[in-house]
Structure formats: C-alpha cells, structure tokens
Amino acid sequence: MQSIQIIPKLDGVKTYIKDTQIGIFIDNSGSTGNKINDKKIILFELGFALNFRKFNTTICSWCDSAKVHFQNQSWVSKNSITPETCTEPSCILRNNATRLVFENSETIIFMTDGEISANDVTRFASQICEIIKNKTIICVITTMDIKDRINISVFAPFLFLNRVIIFSGCLVW
Image (cartoon, rainbow, N blue to C red; front, side, top):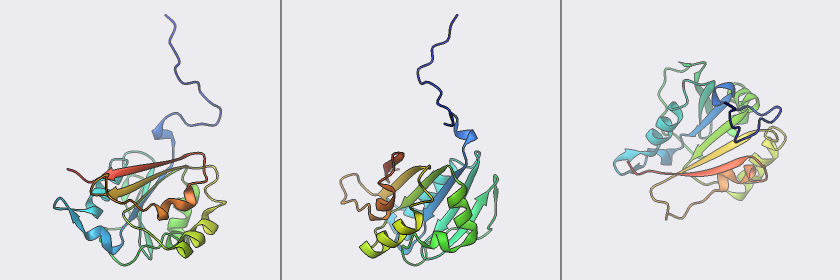
C-alpha cells in the first residue's frame, strides 16, 4: 500500500517541532500583572510557553531588561517571572544570554499585551532586521476579548517577513 504525502518535504525545512530550536519571549512588563477574568496576563503567557517545555525550547522574559528562565528542559533561573516595569523589546538584544537565544532560535514565539512608541518600533526594527530574516515568528497578543482594540506595534518589526503569524490569545478560561 502506498502512503499519501499531503505536504511535500522541502529541503532545509524542519517538519517536526521537536527538530526546531524555539525561543519564547514573554512580556513581563507591569501591565501583565493586570487581571482578566480573575487571571493575571503573565500567568496566561507563562502557561502558554510551558506547553513547549518538552521541546528544544528556551523561555525568556522581557520588559526593560531581559532574562533566560528555562533552557534545555530545566529551569535556569529560580526567580519567578513577575510583572515589572515598562515594555521595551530591544532590551532582549542588550542582554548577551537572551540575544543568543534570539539569534539561535529557528522559531521565535513573541508574546505581549502592550504597545510601544513609534521610536521604539524603529529602534527594535533596526536592531533585529538582519537577525530575523530566516526565522519563523509567531506573535501572540494577549487580550481579554477579540473585540478589544488591539495594538500590534510591538510586532511591527516582524511584519515584513514571509514567515510570521499573529495570534490573538484571547484570555477566556
């Protein structure tokens, strides 16, 4: 019996998530401490990220500083991921450890509930433009309701890519 191949195998394209290096970047700015339906946004983001922990995944947090928390299927930082200061994605590239995760990940899952200024969009875009060319980016915006006014300014630097997905993680438990 001959098997049917629905999606042809492409040279150089990984076909299984287990074969892909994934970097997950969780926004832990102050607003992620807000509650929606009695759940903190940061808990939604962390729960989403932990679904990938059995794969080749590194989980980092970012606000105005960045930190690696989970790598090689174990916790690197014993400190919990808690809501802190402002939303500044370029901080990921100022920290050597999180910069390496960003550069070496084939797939990046980028999570936020916030927005950034036009100047911050320009700065972040100029810093990542060469790094992200051959990556798959999954942008997850956390919101209370799909009908909310959704600001995707944090994701703007990724939007010129061919392999970008924007997902609205509606916080309804």
